[in-house]
Length: 303
Image 1 (tube, helix red, strand yellow):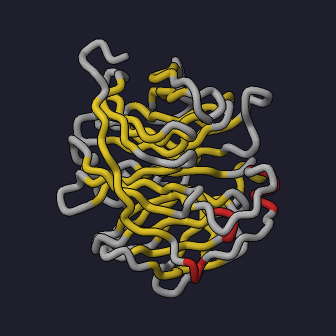
Image 2 (tube, helix red, strand yellow):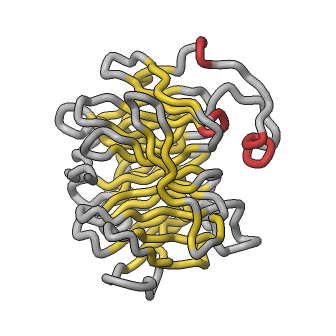
């Protein structure tokens, strides 16, 4: 319960749905490990926008990248041997993707060519990357989730500086997932799925974080997945099994977005004024949209 007032409900609507032409249910190695062997036709995540207002999303088990134009039309940009997850758009339009199998990769949306950027750390492969975000200075933050959880709290959060140096910020996370910087870029919020919490990591110029703490402790559902920040410092959280929540800068719930299915996985602000929240509903292959009280944090795309 929010001590400063009730939680306001915001209605969502379907913006677009993955066309049937791109759907064919079948078994995949990814679903065997992550969806109890379910036969899937897609699993959408990683929404992000380019300067022209096109929305890009990934289809994790099938290694596909789609562009959804402002009218809701779908275009396949790339299909490759990988499990793409978190994604951001550079200023020049190139896509940077956290890929569970391949590390950090870059994709040219004009050609679909996939280029490896970061395969390992200190000659060892990653557990399985999940999501990423950029700072204004070009530093790249990313989560190494793998199959970690309460039984194995060894998930990691990294920072790759613009000069190429890599810092391991924390390595005791039970399933690090989505992440975003605060307005001042001195704190990093991380969705810790299996602990059902949002952690707060203080940032320093070099080296590890310290005094890591819980910002929001959630309950029910399957835990937080993708997160985004608005211009007021509020945190928008896709919470598996319940829906999408907004918490203010103090960590109190202010808004709930519905109706949504059981797998609202990721969120991204878009629209002409940045107040439209786009959400991937992975169980149905839909993208839903809701009008939020504040616009997303203004951020310059990384170069």
